[in-house]
Structure formats: C-alpha cells, structure tokens
Amino acid sequence: MVTTEEQRTVLVTGANRGVGLEFVTQYAAMGWTVIAGCRDNKKAQELSDLAASNSKIAVETLDVTNARHVGALAGKYADTAIDVVINNAGQYGDLDRQSWGSLDPVLFHEIMDVNVLGPMKVCEAFTPHLCRGQDKKIVSITSFLGSIASVSKPPSTPFYAASKAALNMAIRGIGKRLENQGIAVIVFMPGLVETRMLRQTFGLPLEEAETAENFDYRDLPTITATQSVSGMIPLIDGLSLETSGRFLNYDGNEIPW
Image 1 (tube, one colour):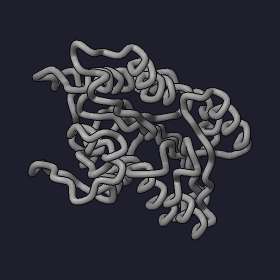
Image 2: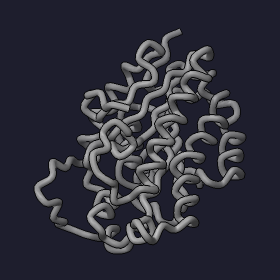
Image 3: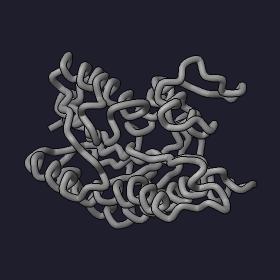
Image 4: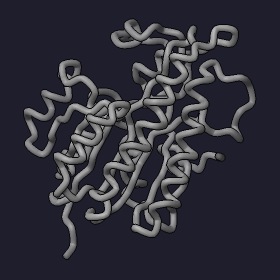
C-alpha cells in the first residue's frame, strides 16, 4: 500500500520557534501529521496558535534533556508509525561563559546535554516508531561550526562548535547502527537563518536576541526560516539508505566533515 502525505507523520523537536516552527508549518501544510515538541508550551504562543488552526498538529511538552519527557512522549505514541524525526532542539549558550580564559564547565555540560545527548535519546526512544513508518528517516540540524575540516580560526563559541561536531559523529554512528532496520540519517546546516540563535552569535544576550528587530547582520548572506526549510524538505524527501550519512547545506551542497 502506498502511504499518502495525509498518512505520514513527522516529529519535530524545538518546534516553538525559528527553523523548528517552520518545519511544523510546512509539513502541516503538506498534509502531514506533526508531533511538535517544545520545552515550554507557555512560551510557544505562535506554535499554539498554529495548532489551534490545524488539527494535524499536536503540541507536546518535550525537553530533550529530560529522559522522563522523552520516554513519556515515546510511550504516548507507542502505537504511532513515525516517518521522519527531526532533531532541531539546540542551545547556543552565553558567549562570555565559553570565551577562552572563562570556560564554564556547567555551561559546557548543558550545551552537550541539549545538542548531543538529547538528540541521541530521541533517536533511541523513537526507533520503534520509525521502524513502523514508511519513510524511516532521521534528520538533525547542525552547524558549519561542526565541520572539523572547515576550521580555519578559533571559534568564538567552542562549546557550541564541539557539540555540533559531536552531534555529527553521533548521528553518523546512529545511521550505521540502524541501517539494517532501513532507517536513513542526515545532518543539515540550515544556513545563516535570521533567528534568535544567529543574533546570539553577534553577541546579543539571550533576552535581547529574543526580541531584536531590524537587526544588522553586517551584509552576511542571511536567509529566512522559510527559505531554509523549503530547501531542506525536498532533500529529506529524496533521502535513502544509499545517500544516508551525508552532511549537507540546506541548498544541497555537501559540507566537509
């Protein structure tokens, strides 16, 4: 039996803003059922409004660093076939606390927990659901800072860079582990998306980055979340075991490991 768009299901973590919210928006518009996980539903008004207008979207509390949350959500959807899991939740971290000379061990572990262990636990918990799905795909959002081959100068955010390199390795390893179950994996650099996280890279504190408007990106070739996700979805659709394990830019260009 051929699975239609209406029968397919995607799980998106970090679904309350930016790229995650856009994945929810576009997949729901395509007729997919969307399980939209976010850490704090009270701070997800735009996502809640979107779900209120589309019965295909289910908003769920999901802190990827909380094993109880991950396990509870996997249990709630135990009988659901999931076609695509998108690991989008991530943390950039305060710049000052990861500057050379002031490296904060507490922040390091927080970032690694969110950016590496969290996605691994999500993949682990939802493997049975993916095995029942038609597409069987795991997508993880990374960064060009995770490309070891591209390092030409010290990163301003060494914790974040290390976490994304670790995520890349973790997902590639998961792909090797799950390939005999028909599950394909891919990691994406989403581009320089105009989001809170990108504004943090310019040194804005979290609170200011959250609400900054008309921000000056210093003539960098930024893109919108809509452009980023519109580029990634066709690439996800074309992902197969033969192309599993790749590190791609949102536009399909290969990024060196």
